[in-house]
Image (cartoon, rainbow, N blue to C red; front, side, top):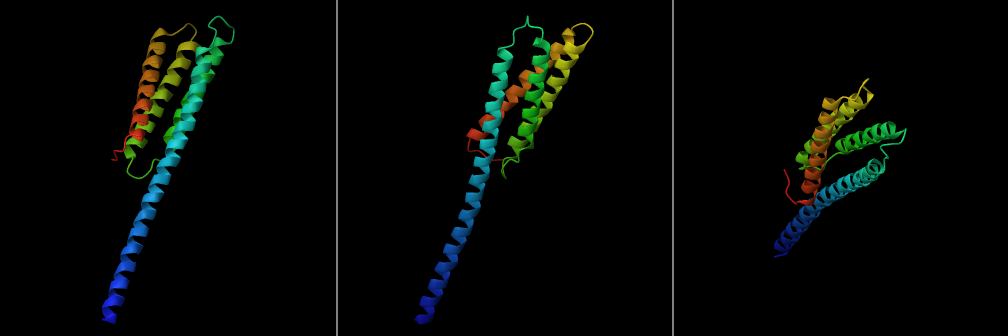
Length: 153
């Protein structure tokens, strides 16, 4: 009788220990996701400020081109920072999307520089830049959708 009580108590302690350990793992996963979302949110806030800067550029001003290019450089840097954030385990799709968006934004950045820094404005490079810019922003939207869903890889 005493042995059975001891075995039952030991089994119960073992089960509770397993539950606690598995709960810690889940807690770490939740914490990792919260940190990732927080990092992406911070970057999105900075991107919104860059967007405000772009919208505020007076095309007639002397420094419009320099301001545009430096802001696009900042945007490309922020996309790269997003790609460098470690996605939580099970969210490799988010990581892949962030990397792809950063690559497309880098293409946009380079094409904008090519368009505006040419001896005469390069319309073809400008079109390429706009396509890459819009593609990167679409991928960023996809990333945000992934983060707001509960679906894992």
